[in-house]
Length: 185
Image (cartoon, helix red, strand yellow):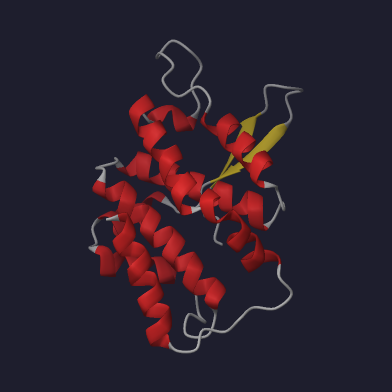
């Protein structure tokens, strides 16, 4: 997956620096927001540098996951900053599973920590993810549950199995993506 912009922030504990990465740049988010579903899928393929879609089930599923997520957030009229934050959350949860090998329970705890503080007042210290209302945060959690957490074992298999099963044809891959996208519209 591609990490675009890096921002250095100080940790509250010990004052050490943490690198905070955004999954897609604001210019990429803007370009995606101007597209219809097919355009989002095409641009997402480019932004994620997916070069083996016709033969890689993993790439087809990643394209589906991020395209469906962006489409879902766009249909809810998220602002550009909210779209960026939402895509960061999608990537965060997936990276916890794929790179950090987190269990479902640990990933849910990390998501809770990442989203804590939503709904705080302006005078309270706010994180970047506080740009969502409480209602939006609840919808985001519901979306993550149905898109990733209910299928956690399948995603674990995808990322941690010894070999990847090839997609038989472009038609199968395309049908899989469209069926999944239609489910979230």
